[in-house]
Image (cartoon, rainbow, N blue to C red; front, side, top):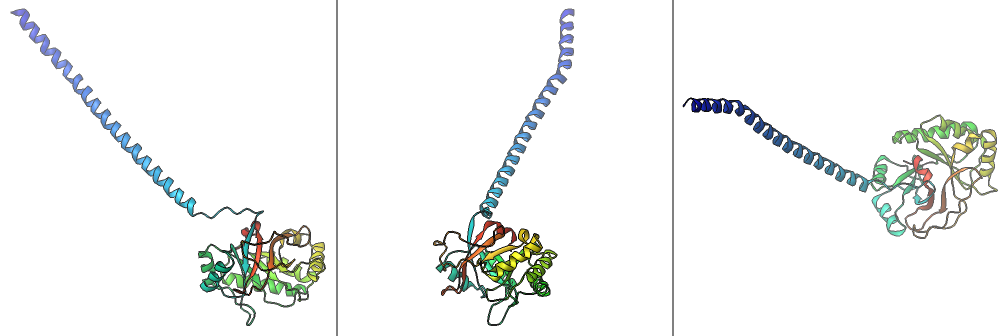
Length: 285
């Protein structure tokens, strides 16, 4: 009987000793299981976030503008008229969708309608870049005149909140008197402003404009390296975007030739047609 009592006592003590071990192991397994479930849930949540982020990135990429090739040619137009929905539709239906639209700063009665903030918003909403033109003069001679015309262009662009770094093109028509002093005044004033200097004109080899340009760069080499040229030479004819000619623009050698107005005065829509180098897009609005 004594040995049986001893055995019962031994078993009771053993059970009391082992119970905490079994309880701890069970609790540990449950904790581990819960932690695994939490980890799995966290991983799934992170995966969902990443997936959502990828979807958003895909949407952004889909809506992003295509990359502009600085060496490629892009079709565009310029117009002296206010860009209404009707004019924009006329161009799209009869010629094609322009990537660039040249517009004038300030209104001159009977000649050109000045660009407005509403027009800027409309063109930008349609994915069109704006090229700024100053035509507030008919005489391109004299340093002080060049300074004055640059300041007029700067002021008109500022009234529209045109961003820093946009180019303004001085419109020097073929019948205007022109000299290197005007180009110097235009260039130096524009370079001291938030905007970049450009010149539009008929840069034919024997023109007064080319002669004045050469004289100006002989006096200041920076003009050749900084002024953007937009030439209307040679003249071909107005075409649709689909039938655009190969780029044959001519301007003084070594100049920053970024635009070619190859066709003027379209009977339909009253526009001119152009080719622009992708390089100019950094200086458009």
